[in-house]
Length: 306
Ligand code: RIB
Image 1: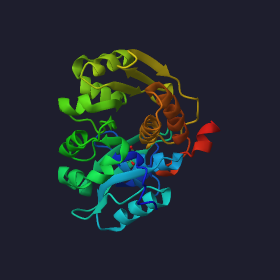
Image 2: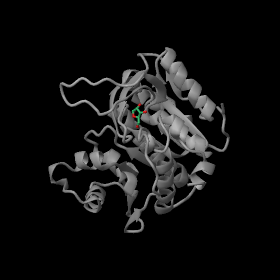
Image 3: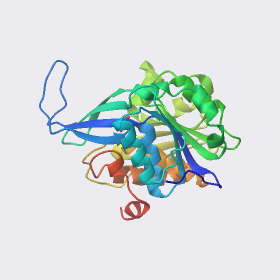
Image 4: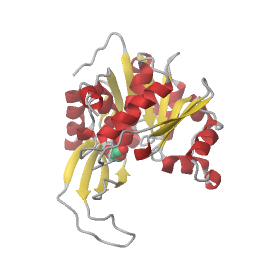
């Protein structure tokens, strides 16, 4: 564990920590249907905790601001963060049981997830204000939407000068203008892009990127799964397609978190958005080749070997 980093953090993640309760199924059930699944597996997860572990595994100096319950799931999450080398001085304990994610994974590796936020919903704007020193020493701050929106908004307001905000709006929710315009980048998958853009979104990911840019972010990344990612950046007035290496996917859980963490870390190291996204698509591809969320996140050597 590394709770004092004098030179600051490459990445501060402000987000959720969940216990993932995972069942493999032949196919995910339709409404009203019951299916039998595999034995239950319990893994550390949550989009925030996943990003922190993914970045640390790549070598980033990483801190997590989150809230877990005073229970076995909370202890599991703290332990796995510390083992990965994440600074957990910002992980608050108590107030509600640790968040839980109910996850089904089918043979193609696709998943469905229901999250009961628990302690994540008690991470408050006041908690963000109290974590001023953590925020002040971060080059990049990454947030998602499994914590309250007002906490995300407070994080956006509290960014130190020169720091970048990376937002993955998952699960999607209506976003205030002030949050959208602080994003650099806004990182969305197809579901999130369609949600934010609404009925007129159409089917063209390039048009989504342009329409999302018009909502105010300084940059936008649209992840396309096996097809890689689209990157739009107001600085370069550009729209680039970064192609993903071809891999055999066994479980996509957490791949988006690994992608976003890798992207955020490389931005903090000074890469431009295109370079950072080119690296991140490789990390995302590596993450789908084994099971689980955090267990599947690659080291730098594993990414280089792809
Ligand atoms: O992105 C994957 C994560 O989503 C899982 O670990 C689960 O906890 C949910 O937050």
